[in-house]
Each structure stands twice: as C-alpha cells, then as structure tokens.
Amino acid sequence: MNNSIKKTPIRLLLASATMIGTSVIGTLCFADNPIIQTKYTADPAPMVYHDTVFLYTSHDEDDAFGFKMLNWLLYTSTDMVNWTDRGIVAGVKEPDRTFTWADGHSAWAPQCVSRKGKFYLYCPTIYLGKMAIGVAISTSPYGPFKDALNKPLIFRSNPGDYDPTVFIDDDGQAYLYWGGNGPCYYAKLNEDMISISGDIQVASIDFTGTPPEASYTEGPWLWKKNNHYYLAWASRCCPEGIGYAMSDSPTGPWKCKGTIMDPDGRSSGNHPGIIDYKGNSYVFGFNYAILKQTMSKHYERRSICVEKMTYNDDGSIQKVPWWSTKGATQIGLLNPYIKNEAETMSFSEGLKTEFATEWERNIPWDTGRKIADRLFVTAIHNGDYIKVQGIDFSIGATSVDVSVASLYGGKIEIHADKIDGPILGTINVNTSGEGDLWKTVSAPVNNIKGVHDLFFVFRGEKDLFNFDWWMFKK
Image 1 (tube, helix red, strand yellow):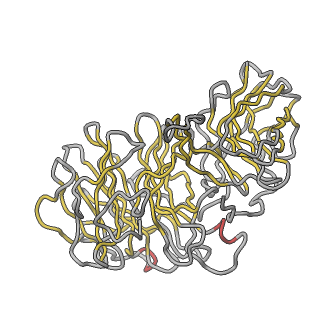
Image 2 (tube, rainbow, N blue to C red):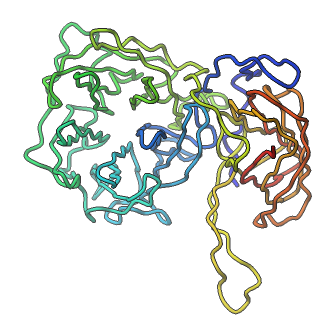
Image 3 (tube, helix red, strand yellow):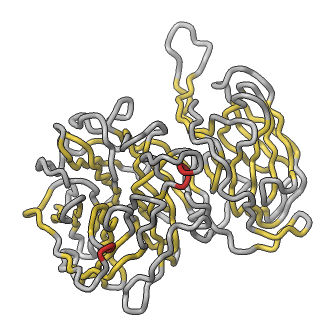
C-alpha cells in the first residue's frame, strides 16, 4: 500500500459554518483545490450527464519523474465539492490494457462524450513509437471501455497528434480537435463517432492584438454557449496559462480573445476542461500544489483544480485568477442516511484509494466465487483524515455504521466542521490482521442537526485498516 502522497495540510483550518450548539448557520461552502488528493491527476475532461459531473483524468504515477502515465481515471460529483473515485476506466498496460496495439505506456489527455446511449473515450497514446489517438466505447459512463477499432483513429507519425477534444453541434455534426506543440488540427467525425469525415484541417486562429502568453500550445477544448463557439487551450509554454478564441462556426476562423487564466510560475503546465453545470460555468485545469508540499524539485506529478468561470455580455470570458485554495462553491448537499463511499471526499490527507475483487472463502475444491468489486480507502495511518463537506443532518442522527477491514486496528474520530472540532463519536476498529475481511462496525454519536462538514480522523499505529463506506442512522 503506497502512501507516497503524504503531506502537511494546505490549510490548518477547513471550516465552512458557524457552530451554534449542535446546529449551524450555513455559509458558502467552497471546494478545496486541488480537488483530488489520493492520486496525482491531470488533463481534466469533465462531462455532464444525468445531473452528474463525470470527470475523466489522466494519472501521473506516484514515482513519476517525467510523464509516467499508464491509465485513465474517473471521478464523479453532484455538488462540485465532494468527488467520488470511480477507479480506472481504461489503460495502456495490463491488467487494464484497453488498446492492445499501443506500446504500453503514455496514457495522455483523454475526453469522453456521449451520443445515443453510448460513450466514446478518445485517448492519445504511443503506437510504434509515435503519437496516436485511439477511441474506446462503452454503454455506461462508468465503463468498462472497449477498443472500438483495434487500431488508432488518428495515426500519421505526427508528434503533435495528441490532446483530443470532441464536440457535437446542435445539428448532430461532431468535430474532433487536437494538437500539441504546433498547430491545432481538426476534422469532422462521422455519426458513428469512430471514423473521420473528409480531410484533416489546421485551425485558423487570429492572434492579432493579443498578448504572447495567449498563444496556442496544446490541450484544446471546444464548446458552444449562446450561439458562440469557443476554443480554449493550454497557452504559451512555459509556464502555461489558458488561452481562448471565439467564432461563429465550429470550424472557425477563430479570433483569440486573450487568456482565461494567465500563466503562473507555480505550475509549468495547464490543461482546460470547461462545462456548464446547474446554472454555473466552470473551468478545470491543474497545478503542482500537492507535489510542492513535500518536494522542491519539479516532477510531473500534477493535481486537478476547478474554479467558477463568468461570461461577459458580449460572450467574452472574464479572467479567472490563478487556482485558489478554495475552488468552487458547493451546490447541493450530501445525504448522510444512505451508504456513502469512503472514497467520496472534498479533501484528505495522507490516504490512497485501491481497487480489489472480493472472493468467497472456505471453498477448498475450487478457486472461489466472486462476491464483489470494491474501491476503498487504504494506506490509513495515525492523523490521516477525510473531509466530507456539506452534509444535511435535517432529522438528526443517533449512530453511525462503517464498513472496515482491519489490519492493526485503530479508531475513527468523527469531528464536526473542522479537524479539531467537536467529536460526534468514536468508532473502535479491533485488530484482526486480515485486511480483506470486511465487517460493519456501529457506534453511537452525539445527536447533530443542520448542515455540517465531517472530518473522519484516524488514530492508531502502522497500517490501521481499510475503509469502504459510512452511513448515519436517523
């Protein structure tokens, strides 16, 4: 269990409400940037589907020096603050190898789009030593994704053929844009979404009158709002900001309007992903904030951030300051009376997530029977914690259940509203030494009402236990 992303708190106090006894007067609750802490993530590709944000990401390995990226991950949220780890959806290396034709490394910036009940994941990787773009397909946004072609969709031995973005216009025509360290390319996609219609073109972008830091580098993102077409990108390297252009057509010509976010020396790279969700607009990108807490050297271990984005009356975009620590405002509340996955969190310290298949035991004459696949929180040590934000205890609570698999045992302290806030209850997890045996442990809690943040703070020695889910009782 690798616990290499050990870190000190970005903020010592993470409170979002004013305590009045055991209830609160609610204030604005903000996200904590970076929004993912259990893994290094980059190249955000958000997709809104059925009232949920599906955030597809690339994944920097914990020991990466350069770009060591072997799979693509998925996170989901319904409030822009608490994100649930959904695990690996595709990859280039066993046991998660999606593209058998690929060279087995370099899982770069993806994007997923939905069309007619199917989901298409466009993935750049390496084929025969050159950049290529593959496409995988699924009937669910959660995957699993299967190679749609058993060969690349784009392969021209062109080193700039990476960072795909896909947009489907109102008339049903789909467009694929891509390109890095050179021009931005585009082509029409056929309705099947896995073949190109016509020739590959170079996007015409007019940079007249715009600052040099707005110039195109890589990572295009295409979308439409209020009859305006937008093309954003990671701007002049290095460091990279986020530049953008507008057009009256999805194929341009494009007029650069400057930067959505200026470059900043705290991050050499960036990569935009832009959506509208529940009446707000958001821009995603990344920085190196988690890495920089423990290391002064630059390695490619990145962390995704999000900020609210605002349009002017003429359609232009107001400049967004560099990634803040507070991120986006929470929209919606979390229900504590259902099973909540432990890997749903707004922030955490020192933890990892892991996927495992559970098998039925005591069947000596065969290999066993598969019971369930689990994604859970692991690498839990003394002082680590999970923060879950904006929980609606509208009818109070008297007890809590947690699902754990004990290693050396320990305790879970549940604090209200800040890491050293009032303790609602303490869950004792006994030692078993068998971390793959899951059990439900219950404990009483002090009655709590209103909207609160919760901090699950872990106490004990060594690897304490694994943590699967929690649920409060009314």
